[in-house]
Image (cartoon, rainbow over all chains, first blue to last red; front, side, top):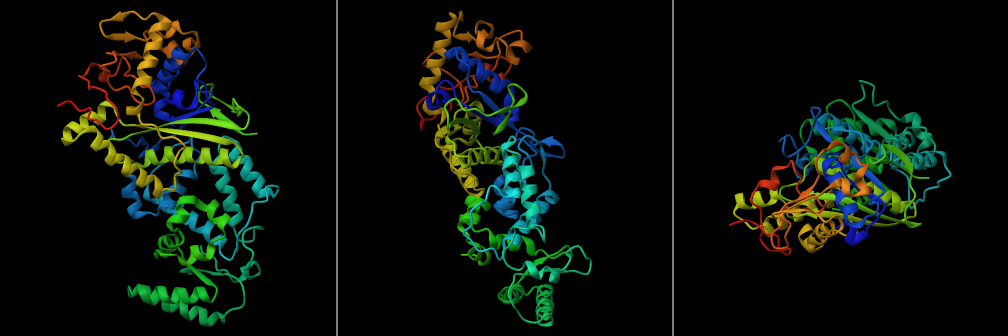
Amino acid sequence: MSCALLGEQFDIHGGGQDLQFPHHENEIAQAEGATGKPFARYWMHNGFVRVDNTKMSKSLGNFFLIRDVLKVFDAEVVRFFLLRSHYRSFINYSDANLKDAQAGLARLYTALKGFSGPASVDWSEPHAQRFKAAMDDDFNTSEAVAELQKLAKPGVHGGREGGRSAQGARRDPRHPATRSRCIPSGGPGPADQEIQDKIDARLAARKAKNYAEADRIRQSLEKDGVILEDGPAGHHLAPGLTRRLLQPHVVANGLYAAHQAGDFERLEHGVT
Amino acid sequence: MLRIYNSLTREKQDFVPLRAGEVRMYVCGITVYDYCHLGHARMMLAFDVVQRWLRASGLNVTYVRNITDIEDKIIKRAVENKETVAELTARFIEAMNEDLRALGVQAPDHEPRATSFVPQMLQMIGSWSERARLPGRGRRREFPVRKFPATAGSPASRSTTCAPASASRSTPSTIRSISCCGSIPSRTSRSGRRPGARAGPAGTSNARR
């Protein structure tokens, strides 16, 4: 089939690591046996997803179906989880690792808040250069994502356009007393006390499981230029945050397209 | 300069396409007899990023990812489910597409199904016979890897004393489980010893009744 569609010789042949031998050895022998010419030039094999350090596979019965995982995690979180490691390394599947990916992705999107597009990538910029160098080095997404994360860190040049000067008001999410992370999105706004009152009211609403009210307050806070992203105190706003952020059209095209489209307002508020 | 780790040479190499500015890429897709798991998702995503980055780098990419829609496991499952192979594979191809759309995996340029390429597979098997004057033992065809200089140095030829691949019952009327990636059942696999199924054009049942 490859020969029929691509010719007897082509550039890249890929597949899972488990296909390397004997499947791909067979394929080379068969194709070269038939054509007498060298077959594919570059052979790429991706690593396994492991569960408890054993390969995930149907025959072993230790697999997680995509559709089942998507019931719990957003598709883009799963995508990010699977892509933030280098393709040749193995990935260990666990809820903790997925949640970590979820938090990482939320941080990236949060860094984009206040950044109005469309924007184009300046490839001479040092971060962009390092991102490109990583991708050109055997598609090293692990390094490339690390570069994005550096960009997303507070105080790093190139992340957001607005709100940089307001970093002082950012609370430390690692501080045990911080139950919610408060990220000013720039511009003048209401007094701190008023915002704090709203945050407290929202937390109270959440505790009372009055999520409609909590959402209403959060939306009101967003109008004030404050985005809430719940911290490690047991609240689970992050999934909701990413769920709202990641509409299907964005999921289908990923960060890059969102970046290209500059559609962050739409991302933020959702379209459904 | 893009560098790619080549499993064939076990080292990173500068990527130089055969035709300047153009990349032809083939990836072994999924055997469609069940829902896709995260291992499949990773493979699909890994090569999705590869083809996206190649395109972003200005290369003109032709990306082919096959669907294995005829194989022993498929036939076995269809028989268990009391449905035709075509019904079973249609269901799981749709499910696969649903999952991949959700994950933002771009569709390949071509997505050939094994059942549509049976004549080409037979032709390839025929070409070995011609080139190597393969001795036929009944309806079985051995693939003598050492007769092909191009493959004589490959790990397979070193690690096996016998042929790594054999095409069993390779007559045009009855082949069995020659899958999309050319995985004619290996000599060691049990598949070559099981009663097979008639291969027909896509859309017909290959399940034995």
